[in-house]
Each structure stands twice: as structure tokens, then as C-alpha cells.
Amino acid sequence: MAITSIAFGSPAEAGQPDALKAALAEFISMLIFVFAGEGSGMAFNKLTDNGSSTPAGLVAASLAHAFALFVAVSVGANISGGHVNPAVTFGAFIGGHITFFRSLLYWVAQCLGSVVACLLLKLATGGQETSAFALSSGVGAWNAVVFEIVMTFGLVYTVYATAVDPKKGDIGIIAPIAIGFIVGANILAGGAFDGASMNPAVSFGPAVVSWTWDRHWVYWLGPFVGSAIAAIVYEVFFINPSTHEQLPSADF
Image (spheres, rainbow, N blue to C red):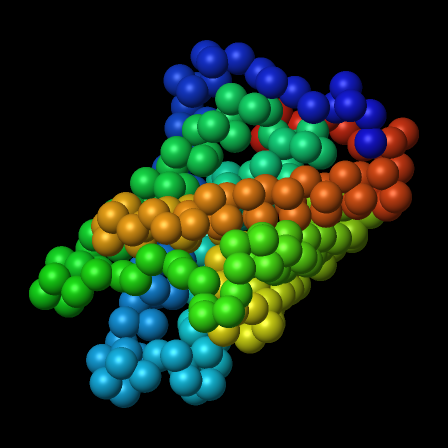
């Protein structure tokens, strides 16, 4: 990957119609994803009398997030690229597929979508709050960072392989399915330890609504580091620099 492929763009991008449409698409996709994902946890908790930390609760969370992310990526793919995750956007920026200023616009939209989804859940459930992501007993902050790095690496690597790589061919709906599946599988692996976020915006919404910030930095540092590693590895080893084109926005 040539470092010159990274583009910063211009602040004027924030006013461009296509950028605003893309940001709106990211906002809506994130709202759909968080409302369904976090809402399923609240529903399971209600039906089982606070039993969401059981194996069945973990499986339910995995399925709900996998299904919701598949839909959220699919509905946003043709407008914004269907990032639905600040870490995915960061990986696209590192690879030169989106400018820095457009990335900022995406990050704001994604975080707002998560906050609005959590506020709507609070309103719809009569005041119940979505729980902020937290570490399980015996899990240290740096243990969780490693979890988030590895899980997000797998997610962003999957995004690159199925959606970004210009040699991927016409795999159509396989990309959002694979992206949803890897998130669901990672929740099964890491959910019992740190909640398996892989997505700073997903962690941000519940933290804002519940105003709980304990070790919140874990859910930003880990995903951004994992995303950057995945982007660099895929760009350097699997995307031919001679055929790699600078894109104004994400090509997935």
C-alpha cells in the first residue's frame, strides 16, 4: 500500500449532496442495526427476568446482531458503502477508499444513529436503558483491547475480501452475509468477556444514554487498531497496487 493513497480531502465535502446522502444512509443503517441488536438484548432480558448473561442470551445476541447487520449493510451499500461502523470507515480511509473529511462525516452520522436508536429504545420500553458495554469479572482492560483488536481485524478483513478487493468478482449478496456472520461468530467468541463490540458507535450510544464511561476507551482503541492492521495487511499483500484506484468514497 502506498502511503500516498491516503487522502484527506476538503472540509467542503461536508456540504456536497452525495456526501450528505451517504451520511444520512449511515445514520439510518446504524439506527436499524443498534435498535434491533440492543433491543433484542433488552427483550431477552425482560422475557428471562434478567437472564441475558446466560449461554442462550449470548446465542440470541449473536443471531440478532448478525441478522441486523446483514440488513443494515445491504440497505446502505449502494448509497454510502454500508460501513455501519466507524472502524470499518477507518479501515477504508487507511486503504485510500474514502477521504478523511468524509470519514468524519460518517463517524458523526454513525454515532448519532446509535444514540438515537438507544433513545428510541428507552422511550419505547418506558424508560429502560440500554446497558453500556462492560468488561466481565476477571477481564482486564488490555485483555479486552486484544479481544477487540482481533475481532475487528476479522471483521474488516472480511469487508476487504468480500467488498473492497477489486478482484472479488460479482459476489453480490455474499458480502453483507459474510460481514453479518463474522460479527455473529465474534460475539459468540468474545461476548462473555467484553461484550464483543467491534464497533465504537455501537458502544457509544448506550454509554451516552446511560452516561456510563468506565473503560469506554477500550471500545475505540481496540477496533481502530484492528481495523488499521486489517486494511494494511490486505492492501499490502492482496490488492495489486497497479490496479488500485483512489476512490472518492468507499467502494463497497
